[in-house]
Image (cartoon, rainbow, N blue to C red; front, side, top):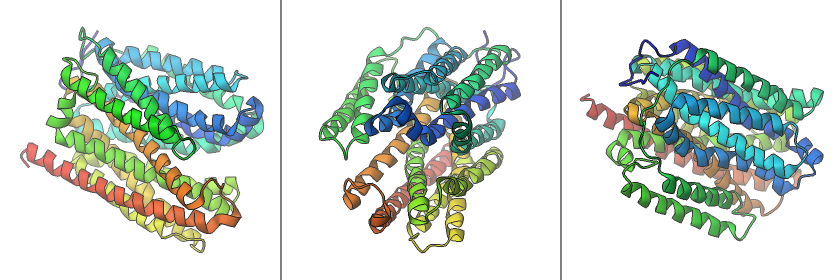
Length: 472
């Protein structure tokens, strides 16, 4: 068993290109499954006789499974081996995906979606850390660029390909086909991914902190997702926040914590990069939600036509991500990430000015701006995060940035739900209440542009701190 230290590639380690190929495959499949399910929700609801609330939980439970397991998975992998946990994640995700296509019960479907999210957490928490261990800092940005591009391609192709599969073969075949590709990824991992990465072997695992973190996040996510629908949601959300406070207290006192808080306090570039991740994904996620509805209800486009428009943004992101990766190998990654955050702020302000009379050319321009923002931000920011920690903390770093990304998107959907309820109450979006919908969209996008500006400040401060720490 080879152990990677100080970011050097040992002779017995996996080939960097082969590792990149294996990791890229699963990094495509995870977001593909997350985005593909949205198109299938109506027909799944009819086939499984699901209520509207149960359909809403289909996305929530996968987010919960992913977010709640990410940090524990990263720490567990550092103790017992990243490749081992990566393989277990691929197996769990593959089996749960296959059984999802076979189930006839909405309750079992929800349980399996949680399990699927847990499997994806094992993959996400280890794959980036493995890639970081294999690639030295001088070439790490290029590898990260490929990974980020695959994520965006998965997100953009999910609705399009799943719609085609549903129309011609049925919704179950979305899961059957993806399960087949996951099985191929499993074989690729067994055959090609050589070596093992065990950074914290024989160290104890923080079971108490893990339990408190899991329960707190469950309360927080379910509470936040139901804030406008359930009176108990406020108490659940508060309980989740209190639980996270207790988790912080526990982590500060234990010798081998799940999350080393000293890493956050003693490494401000790392902390600011994670804050920028949270703010960027919170802000950028708001656009996709609103404009799917805007194009169909305000501009009277069909779902297929709206999908063609919405694919512009992820295409730009996928094209720019590898370029940004190469740039982050040649220039300080934090500077490029800051430019990406600035584009996000400008794009969201431009999006907030959109109204029912706005031309399609302007809408495409806004989508290109926001695509450029994420394309320029994600890869350099991830590279800066992984470069800012040593080998011992790479698993934690990879898990934490994925957690920030997931919770950022959750915060976005929660904030949007609250703003929509203020402007529209419990009404669904119809042609009769378009003015109220547009008002809520503009208010939300202006607020998220302010969040994006704050993220730009964090990203800029991170760059200056990193430069001063390196003596430049």
